[in-house]
Each structure stands twice: as C-alpha cells, then as structure tokens.
Image 1 (tube, each protein chain N blue to C red):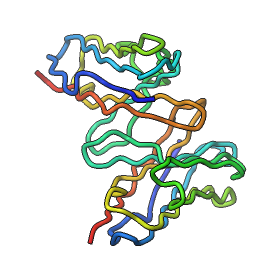
Image 2 (tube, chains in turn purple, brown):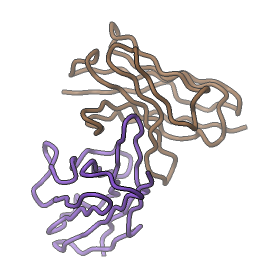
Image 3 (spheres, one colour):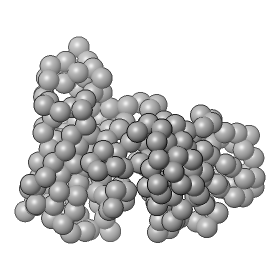
Image 4 (cartoon, chains in turn cyan, green):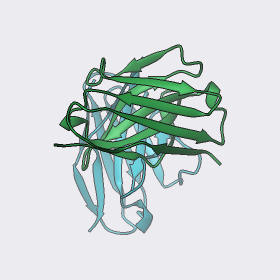
Length: 106
Length: 117
C-alpha cells in the first residue's frame, strides 16, 4: 500500500486553519496514524485510528476519513505547529509512511 | 518517564557492518513490540524491522532482509540491530520505537549511520 500526502508544502498564517491530505492506494479502513516532526526531533504521535487524538495532542488537531482518503485539520495554527506531518498505515507486519507535508509560516 | 536511547551509529564503507543498540527505560520492555525505523535526510520515515517481546517473532522490510538482524536482551532492556553488507542507500538516522496496536508511541532520538567510501 502506498500512502500519498498532499500538498508537499502548505503555507499558512498564524491563527488560520491547515488542511492536510493523505491518500492510500487501497482501502486501509480506519487504520491510519498521523505524526508531527519538528527539525532535529523524532516524530511524535498525534492521531491514531484516523481520528483519535493521542495523549497530549491539543484539541485543535483533528483527523477524519476512512478507506482511502484521510484529512488532518489543524485549527487556529500556533507557532509550535509549524512542522512536517506524516501519515502512516500498518497492515499485518508492514508499516508504510507518506512522504510528508511541511506546514510553514506564510 | 519513557526513554529510548540509541547508539552505535557512525561512518562505514560500503560492504561494512555496524551494530546499533537501543536502551529502554520507563516501561515494561519485555512486553513490548520494538521496532527500528530509519529516515534519510529530507525524507519520510521508513520502517526497517520489528521484534516481539519475547524475541520469538521478527520481521524485516524487503530492502534489508538477509542483511540486517534484529535482536533483544530483555535482561538489559536493550534492542539491537546488526547491519551487514551496508549500502550507500542505508544512510539514514536510525530510530528505535515501540508500538501499540500498530502505532509508534515512543521514539528515541536516533543514531546516524553514514555509508560512504
């Protein structure tokens, strides 16, 4: 299964909403995870099961979708939200990441 | 507090070998699926290998099958990755991570492996 994220880069102003997309090459049901990665840091788990926020994930982050189309929405972007976001799918014993969407300051 | 601390990375020539280690603390290591995930500069993460808690089950990505070997010592709370026949394309930051129901919950800070002549 190939995970394709769009756009590659998203320019957003502080306080605005960001909408990130992740598409799977075949249905993954709700088996979809989102991570945030800041420069020099390891990825951090944000959302799993397509829409469940991980412990510590602020409520402004929300995930939606099922099957092949998924969305990560960040409402009212804060300065600490500028980062790269990856989606990931797991099936049996294979894990696949998307290539990432960089959210940058407009 | 959960901590995963990797070590063992470095510069190695193509065809060479390295052994990575990951020391875990703050959770029950022996009950945890543990993974190695790598990330080349400017690229997304790529899953490499996994091992279950008692070490009896392991899997590898196709790109490293037959060259890399994952192991663990639960008495030392340590995960290993033995890497042989290294290639230039194996150059990456190597993370260890644990998983819960398919998601990577905790990650180390990574150890850099550079394969170059």
